[in-house]
Image (cartoon, rainbow, N blue to C red; front, side):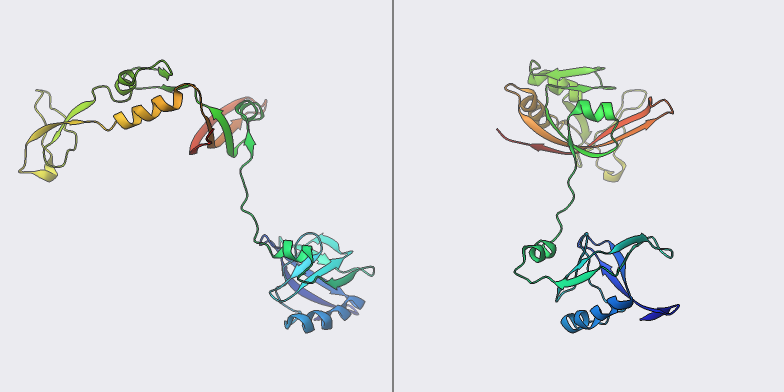
Amino acid sequence: MSRCGRVQKAVLSVEQGDGQQGTLVLWGSSLTWLPRITRNTGTHHRGSHMPLPPPHITRNTEAVWDFRVLLVRDSMTSDLPELHSTPWGSVQPVFPQDSRAREFCRPPRPPSNPELDLGTLLSQRYSGDVDLRVNIISFQFQASISQNAQLDSEASLEHIMETLGGDVTYSGCGRCAVELGTDANGIYLPCYPCLPQTSVRRYYRHVRLVAERIQSLVSRPLKSFLLTVRSHFLCDENSVPLVQDILLLDFQFLGE
């Protein structure tokens, strides 16, 4: 408790259910609330932690309170909001059987990503994590052996494997299976960690399972998927995109 001019005040530390902190300042006649609060919570008014859900309910581990007609203002000393009592304010306990108390004591739900369609994402140039509900009709690979190769429901498994890995076999170390390069004369370079072992074997690349998965994704009838992507748009002063990046974060099959 402190004195501002000739008016006494008490400052309580408060915290919302979502973890946002603030302060509740009791002025003048509102100080009469303190005996009720401290008697029911067993905590001191200064520095006590009584979470405050928006807009007027506060709580600690033992009690929930409903504060009404408060003034909200920005703090002059921190970035936290301040709640101030007013002459018209009141406070009442909220009992455990009250639905408001149960709602306030319920753990906060984790924030979810907004769900947009691809057209809205591109037209609004939304930056952030977003969920897209889509049907996959084709895969397109660039800067690969087959430039701009597009794989759709008509692509055979052999064509998909060729696009993904070129030759589906490779020459590798006979001991650790790492792929071996060749020198200017076409002679295999040694696998230095495995020396003096110098044997060479042919291996299959791990592309068949990937190829089979791609074929199942684009085969008809088309299936629905939920893609979680992270989009980033950087625009000039005329809202023309300078940077447009979309990174895939998660991929879920939604079922039938």
